[in-house]
Amino acid sequence: MALSETDTATGNQNSFVYVVAALAALNGLLFGFDTGVISGAMLYIKDTFDITMLFGQSIHPSLVEGVIVSGAMVGAIVGAALGGRLADRIGRRRLILVGAVVFFVGSLIMAIAPNTEILIVGRILDGVGVGFASVVGPLYISEIAPPKIRGSLVALNQLTITSGILIAYIVNYAFSSGGEWRWMLGLGMVPAAILFVGMLFMPESPRWLYEQGYKETARDVLSRIRTEDQIDAELREITETIQSETGGLRDLFQPWIVPMLVVGSGLAIFQQVTGINAVMYYAPRILESTGFGDTNSILATVAIGVVNVIMTAVAVALIDRTGRRPLLLTGLTGMTAMLGIAGLVYYLPGLSGGLGVLATGSLMLYVAFFAIGLGPAFWLLISEIYPMEVRGIAMGVVTVLNWAANLLVSLTFLRLVDVIGQSGTFWLYGILSLVALVFCYRLVPETKGRSLEEIEADLRNTSIGSDSSATDRTDAVQTDD
Ligand code: BGC
Image 1 (cartoon, rainbow, N blue to C red):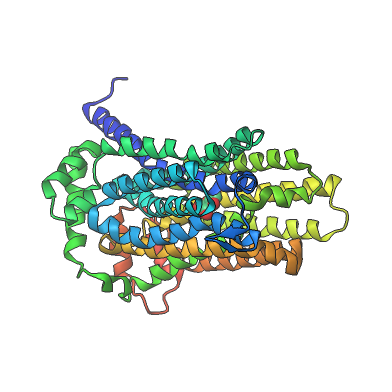
Image 2: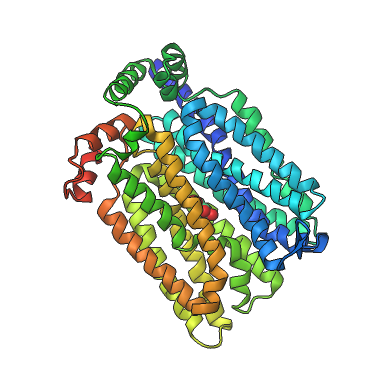
């Protein structure tokens, strides 16, 4: 059957939207690569540099190692803190370009670093780039995407985060025989360069343009990503939301926005304190204790990376159909159960053979449940639940919390294992997953299928600050199409 003119037009707009979103999702690749690469590189950096000295002072090597590893997270906290504001000020597209350059320079510095101090500078810069990328990637995609496929398009960013982690694991494996850590870290320049060059050809977010007063340019951009009749409706909606806003930082603390700050902050913290990065950063170490040898635990880590990517792809396919809440709640239920089982397996004596397999299996399923729910849902929801005028700042604030919680988990994991044991640590993360489940069930709204302006209008109209439960708000933003 021949396509009508409108069908063809919609098809063209949609394919361009996919191109823009896929390219912007490379922000996630920088993020994921940076997360996955350091554990492999660190093994060999120790052979090149004397890590018992820093700035001429003798320092405990594990502290120096900690600074190198967590330097990127400190950078990311700074990047996310500045990134939200910058995204509002200089625009989404320009910030993506700046982020790519910063990440590129950071990776280059690490690759050629003559000593530990310069390596740390490169690592922090890399982190700043990742901090920018983690705020602006989802933000930009959510503003470009049509409501019906916004969930999948923003979740693409999580798909590239997980792909970045997997690629880094593979790169680590490939360069491990020669111990070539400079190559491991330097390869980050490749995705950064592709992101930079690609973004030069991509448009600015029409919502940002319109709010800045570039109305004609906003219309031009929309004409490339929407059909004619959609453009007018969307511009009308954008105008209405902009007119009904008072402007300024104070907006963030208006009574009707505060509950969404609570939701975003809660999601940000729970996404980390339920332990995902203990597994991402320390998987080989955790798996070694189940009787795997060195090589096998690295391979099992790669397998965890693969599960993470595959289940994130499943979430991308489902999230606009099922909605955000069902995936989030299912994911958290599964994470709680798997952490309970993993804790139990580590509690039993003689962790090898069948129990070793059970331990590995429960960790893989734990990652699978994270990948289908909390992983993508966090980044998606925070790009949806804030009103236009404070969207950048609000996302910046909750992203800072996410990175801070990430830093906290990675700094405390090994110590926790010392103090309360491996099983106690898993159970602790399990209890926190259960708390997260209750939190999400009570407070997280459904945003499926609504335009960002509709979500905003619905939240504004729901009496907030009263004891309206999440279910009221959920209804308020529930799709009916
Ligand atoms: C989290 C990261 C984590 C990754 C794992 C992301 O959504 O923010 O901290 O490493 O998922 O897939």
